[in-house]
Length: 420
Image (cartoon, rainbow, N blue to C red):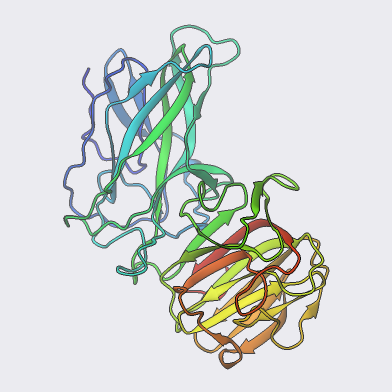
């Protein structure tokens, strides 16, 4: 069976078919750097099992052009063979325990064809990168079946790393925590291939799905870089990029979908803490913000629930007690007089960091506090610059006094700007 893969396409697409257990392999091949594009017009790839071909053609409806939401990165693009090349191993077909179903899996890699690095805004430390997302923009869609399906045949993505809003809500993605070098360099392709697994009814003989890439571009090709963590996945295990867990005392519990779907609830006993941290390429002279929608579930007297920024010079964070919200110091106590608030209900809190000048605290779209940089504590020794959230506790060696619980809807941060 031969597959025609030579034709460039604007919309990066990988298509799988169940015609045999040995689907031809596509490997990365050198290409000249392409011109970046942040506005995409969909292309559709089709597998013809009988003819043994893979072809691409534009969608007939011009209105199918996509309006990029830029929720993750301004660099959302495709251009297979021009700005990026997605390649894959042979497809493996297995019969899972589900009756009437088969799974189709392939190991997939990405080659950068741009004239600059992708995957993080700068090289060097920290080693943690924003990475590269390949997300399903539409599909999977059944193309043909061996006989009629009652009910209709379906295909699903079985092992995506998570869901995020790229061009639409809850789009499934695979993620590489890597920085790729410019096209033609020894590091322009992913070190690891990610397994992509699909499940389909056994009567399906061909299906397709469209894929786009979202990756941070190095400056000056991009000037803002965003990470979006939603509380529907465990930050240490399922979220991509992953967060580091910082604990002390008896380990608490982390539960998804409590009290409702898409909410992460963190609980610790007395004399303990549990929070999450991500290193990133943040500097004292850089603009940034971090935003979170969360609540405290316990009426603590101190600001045991907190989130914030450490820019390697200053520690800029906000804490919640059972009745108050405000900026906190490096010993996790309120700075000055906090604001009285109904912290046991969900609110959206945002810290806006104006380079090395000052920071503001916003609550539900209204500014409620501001401080000059001199009012904040020095960077915490032993913690690399980055962003954190969770139950950090209070005190010089912060711990929860009597035990704490908080629920988190999402945490978003962005480098290079002070607000979304």
